[in-house]
Figure 1 (cartoon, rainbow, N blue to C red):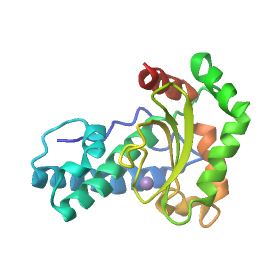
Figure 2: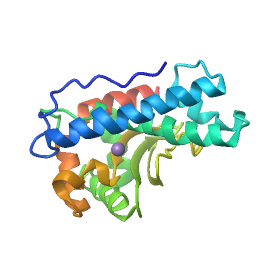
Figure 3: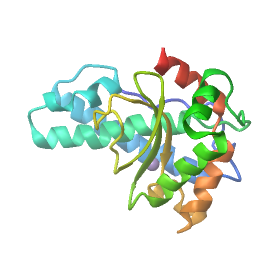
Figure 4: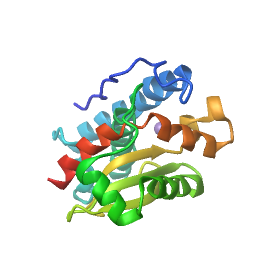
Length: 205
Ligand code: MN
């Protein structure tokens, strides 16, 4: 039985960047629905694993197409939102240090350049989807964007996501309406680089 992560901040703690009503709706409704539907699909498929990433990496083992699609969409929605909500803080660390900072400079030249690239991927994702920063098996960093609830795991890239930027309209429409780029800027104001560092260390081993 998969459970949503607990938020370690209050629902209004991300104001003014992400408003309380959006957190209540996004975490309290959308994420709940993905979680419930993921659990239902797992039950249907006879999956008892408690590792969502492992389920998403092994979708081909599910023979029934409708169940496989339900696992991909709702398992993705479950996993992606856990990562999305876990990376925020009311008082975020504003820049990474250590190994992650080194890897960012090595690949992108600077943190600003990485943020520019992720912002551009997020802004140009046509329709619903996500922008990602992931860790490759050799510890290097990879950016990407995906549609719907697909992610680097369900797409079998072999990479582990450490930043998930949700650009579904439900993530920003209540406050930012059609102005997705303003929401993307706000995302980076509350992204906690200390949390991303910890995810990097875990993924890179
Ligand atoms: Mn979402």
